[in-house]
Length: 301
Image (spheres, rainbow, N blue to C red):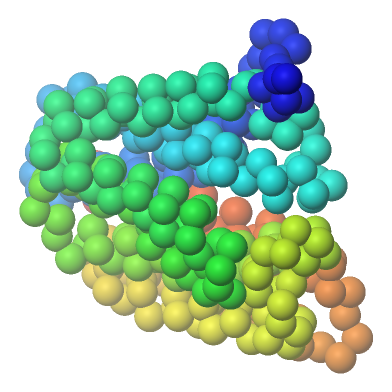
């Protein structure tokens, strides 16, 4: 007999397609992806309008490989998602898309995306493949289910987007490109620990060893503070962006650190604090990488 998850009940809505490819996550990653390309253009002395077709090709390719990798993640996580109350509306859980069509969609997106990236140059395509491998294999299949360090492992592929953007313009990847990688790498644990704390009971129910689910609140807030503090010196590695950028980025880091320290107050609403950390982290990502573009535009004027 055909299982429930192999039955499609009709055409997927746009909302359901976005859920399958985790469009919110993809959109968030496109900001540092573009920032990487933009900074490579500025500091490599390239003409933006001449580079625009490459940038657009890279952005489309990046969107496709990220969406495809997220779809694979949803395919592999069906068993645990079916246990977690917050995941019940996912098309991969409620049977709105069959496994066969889900696999076709995910691999189709990744293959087309990689073709586009390889059309730009070989390093860009290879970095894209590393991102797919890291997210699908190292995070989704291995670390997420087997180690409390899963979020840190997932931070490696999660920090790949600015490298893809930079490599599409300048395959040599300057130290500034790797600094962008460091920013995203250090940003992710505090961001995802905050989210995981809000859903710690669900992860525990699904037997997923997210840090807040298997360790104490004290351990979680210490880890979040550690990663936020790790961000403090990074703006000083980005001297090419100027003093104004360093000052603003440092103030942004200090504000996040103060919020992290607030979590050590004796009487605190833990869930409310975790939500504040999560919301701040989202704003941080946008402000930091948009700011890298704005300050360089001002420098060019």
